[in-house]
Image 1 (cartoon, helix red, strand yellow):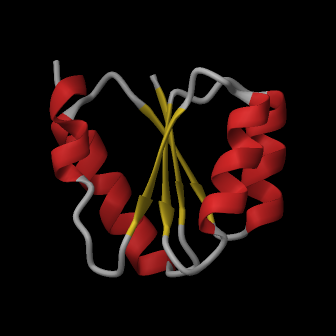
Image 2 (image 1 turned 30 degrees about the horizontal axis):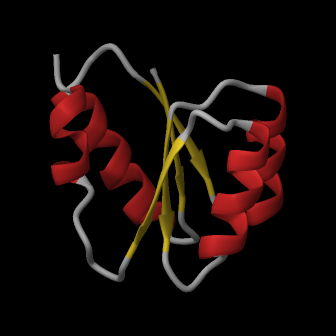
Length: 92
């Protein structure tokens, strides 16, 4: 499974990657800090699950990613919202 996380805060991205890999070792985590690189990655690579920090790019980026990856599950997270509950169905 490939999980992409989009946030401008690199410390938050590192923390998120640690959280995801701690919960499930069978996952590839892609960390992106800008809309362009996130959309480009989704255009050329399979993505299963996407977390986008609200207020950055949110809905427009989610729609763009889903146009490239129609089966991708996209979640727009509010400030300070934990993504761990979204990972529960994917924990091995």
